[in-house]
Image (cartoon, rainbow, N blue to C red; front, top):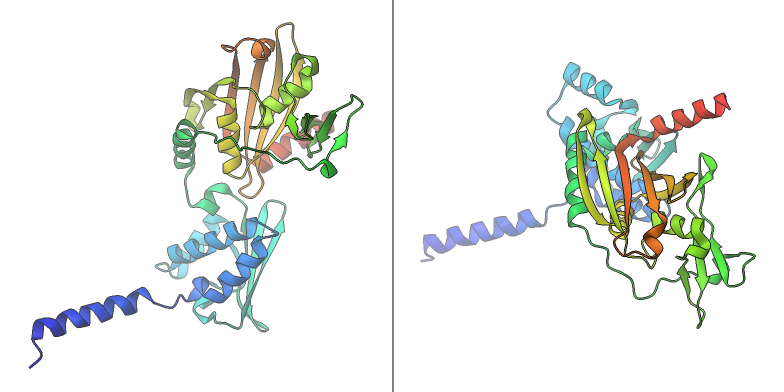
Amino acid sequence: MFPLKYFTGLCLLLFSLSGSGQVQTGLRHPCLQTQVDSLAQAEPYVAVVYDFLKNYADTLKSLKGTELRKRLAYDGVEVEQGGFDRVHLIDEHTSITFLRAKGLYGVRIRKGAFPILEAKFPSSCQLLTGKALPALEKELLEGVQGFRYQPRLDVPYPESGLTALPAKGYYVLKGNAYHLESIRSDIYLEKRKGGSFVPVFSEEHLNESIGNLLVCEDTPADVDLHLVIRQYGFKKNEVTLKMKDWIAYCRSQGCTFYWGIEALEPTAMKASVFIVNEVLSYDHVMSVEVPYTVFTDPEATVQGDVNIFIPTHNITTLFQEYDKSN
């Protein structure tokens, strides 16, 4: 006779195996994931919005009626057709599309002509990540203090994508402007023997070199940044790290750097740096003072002061007001 203890063990084993192979349903259905993977190749925000939807649907499961409506209203989530209570209807015949407008994201999930979920919501960092501002600030503080940039052996700058400058052997990798033409993300490059390109860093090209130092982690300079990080509730922390570690960390979080000159003083340049996350709609806004001795003195330190996780629409409003007054 088959011993009972072996029968029990076999049942437990089969149960664990069947559990590990469970088919994902609802917003986690494989057909949606496949579509999202394809769409995200061209539009990275799609993956972020999809992750938000999956997690948000989980948080709503226990809410009904008035509680559900209040939560949606509080978060600014507007359901136009269907609802989160229909996501169990998702199957292999379901399609998903994403929408993006100023300050908003949207999603449309349909099975043929039948609307399962059509909704729009703010492109808010806190909403999309499910993290309150203090948690985001803590994450950044811990992240920058533990992050180290790993230099790449070769940073390819294809000559076909560069614009030659009047000075022979110098080029610019054109970026974009941020609200004002004087605030840009350009990188200035020098062509070395052998045909490779490296970011410019020399006193002879002062503005271009300091710009590279502020926006490009590949700049050949090992300069310290003393940074005052201002947080919600008038709190602040001070850290000292390598300039390239700060840039590389922020870029690893999906940010783009833009900078503009504020003033050229006798011993230093004052500049503003906008560190912009377009997907999560926030800016870190940093003012810096760069001593000209960064080119000659290994002890020279950039002084920085940054306000973090400012909603992008707040920055846009400030620039709009500036435009009206000028």
